[in-house]
Length: 310
Image (cartoon, rainbow, N blue to C red; front, side, top):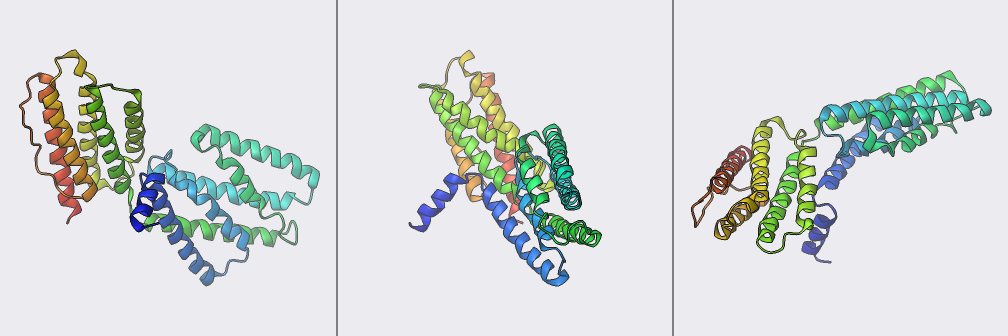
């Protein structure tokens, strides 16, 4: 397999580069955790390692802000420590442990169901992480409990610091989602004059969902530009939906499609795109509105490009 085909395959299975960002973060955290373990030598390795298994949920698209991500990370850390210590202390009493584990499972499940519904599958992994400590000897020893708490706390603090200092790469996710949304919009424009099918709309909504999920994770200095670009492109899509209420001007919309392609190409290459070029002037109010949105989208992208290049 050539490198170009490999890159195409990667882009196909990970179109927004979300999994690649998660991989980079995991490698960074794993490297730092290895050094932390080497320096501090936590007594209980299992307790130190368990929280690392749950960090991948930090990258879940359903957590749409850093506040939500950090709250979820703290929730995981606290619950894993509580379950690890309580399971370890209660485990020697097998009958009590059976009922206690059911209560713990139900409590965690319903809490996650109420506050983190899209992440409900994390419940079993949290319980399993808490149960990894059961084989620790001697059983029901308070010194072991202190070691579990200390090792888990050290791990969570290290992970939290790593995530705070890791460079924010969510602008790349937003750009990929926007480029794919624009590409779907181009196909939608073409289909409007032939056979507009539901497939185009479905693809647009998928990419639009990614734009919405990651819009609050973009660095603050870029946020105003990304929001304005998204709004203007979205308004062009809304205008296309109203196309059937006026006489179709195929030449005008063909020009819009070509300009959208120019913008999409500029987004992919991180280059400015000048101003929209139209071979035909807008005739109706709807077309004038589309032209304004197109000009504003180009202008905002050019401003964002200037910031990115400095």
